[in-house]
Length: 323
Image (cartoon, rainbow, N blue to C red):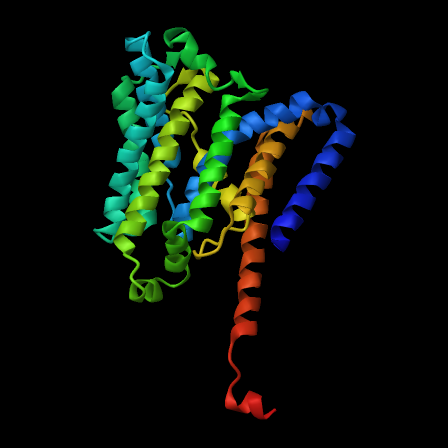
């Protein structure tokens, strides 16, 4: 909680500093843009957090996003009257299948997650090229309802923001109140002990990668509708921002530690930087530099915090007790 409050204070201070340099940044219009632009990052960061809690990582999320977005775009092009809900369900379902393939390799074949998802990242990118034949699908080829849906408004907020709020609610309730959520922390904290208390590691690992894929697939359909284009290299490098949001938010890459609030704050931090740089006429390459520096700093802070915890919890030896 202390870390989340500190990160929130940093975000607030940074927002005020940017607003001082560029007052337009603190207008309601800009804040609305930040919320809309950060929604997809927040959703995928929450799904990635589930994977990282189990000491894993999913590097293929951006590739799954591109593949599912392309599938939704091509379907909308072939069937212009298809309902938007079916296109979103298509992305969700196809993404879930792709994530389940990753999960099967990790959970049942015991292949290291970084190896599986690194391979599937290239595999799914290639599959996107084969699916599309290397062609782009532009907004003119998509149903009007589909390309306008993500930014259409309900009660003053865009649909993207509502999807993100739903994801936040489900993640919070699932991790805090469900047996599955508690099993993620238990397994990530100590896999051996989790096994002894009846947690099935195969089921846990398979589930988190399937969820990660499903969320990536849904975000793929929303991404295509939001930006009005589908192409093979869509969201190239987006997986790094997703992981960065988790790490900045205090999710431990060693597993077992992480909160929904922290993950969300990490996404807001990156989203705010991404929107501030163009307003301040700063090169977008600075975002990569800043993100990399913040990730490194966050990892070092987590490492020092972990060392401090070990020192506090380490039992005294006989010699220490005598002293």
